[in-house]
Image (tube, rainbow, N blue to C red):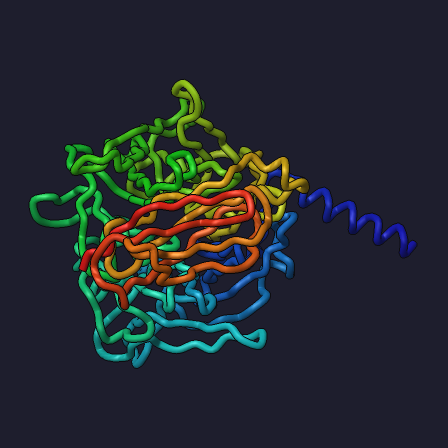
Length: 468
């Protein structure tokens, strides 16, 4: 009898994991606005009772490790997302990760940080005064010394967004954007947003928080919203950007082609098989050397409405674009905020579904596999590559990216124009795959420098410029 019971449990769990779409929340209260940290196999979400939780994800099945994801309790009394329009978020620096959310402090909404240590959270308000702060968006840069937080200061209707470093939160800097028109660029300290005022109102803009400098990257008449930027393997790991355009009926892809402004190099349109016509919540991710975009396709452009969850790829071949609806057909229903998780063997997508007044979290499988399923390193479709640093010219820091076809010993060094070695950035064994290293030139004068990647089988050098 005991063996039979174990077999039934194992069969049920295996069968549940194999299903394409599975509800993973309790269904008794709302789990709102989930966010995933793939590198740590974690998800954070906020419940309708105002509690902030962090759940462990099984990297093979994409399911919660614990019953309904209630692994680690971070905090309570968080401000309702119906007021902030954003749930808890992960922030990442070289010193680790933390969770950020909105909660009252001395009866005034503030941005709170919860740090994890010894299997428990310690939470505190970043600032605590009579200025209202809410709706945190947080940087994820594993090469940065600290985490940076973007938030609304004052009322949401005022549209005043500021950013600050968690190590010096009193030094707040105003940004010319509003929420849902701005995002951090992962692995950088830069933001991409839709400019809200001046001659270039409505254009995509990149803002470097290190130098506090702004660069307008588009100059066309298309309406734009929900911008994102990332480093795309399809374009030699150079930065590209996306935005919803033409009243949210298309996704525009923009790339720096050497001109004054970035060029729109691709448009993604709503497939004829979709029941709806407006894009929402686009978010890029990279897996197995290719870029994809998860999103919803909605019935109504600027509101919660009936919707479907889709994944699109960048253009492949002759105008062919990967497109797939990834959730099982649950009928006409509201789905929102898809989040991508790169598991051990495959990619999963999580999203909210509104059912009988409760926001549940669903997990859907995709047909996308991750590199980790390739057991033989010689089968990996990758060569040695050393990419141009970005930004360039720069002050004071820049990111150097490279890829390795196998695990081996690597050196990455910086030289001046006379050939003198001035800094060693890497001198150790690295795993195969993509890598990024930040070079901080704050102690070096303006001028031309060279960086060199060297292994037993490969040597390549590129030029960069410090401009102070």
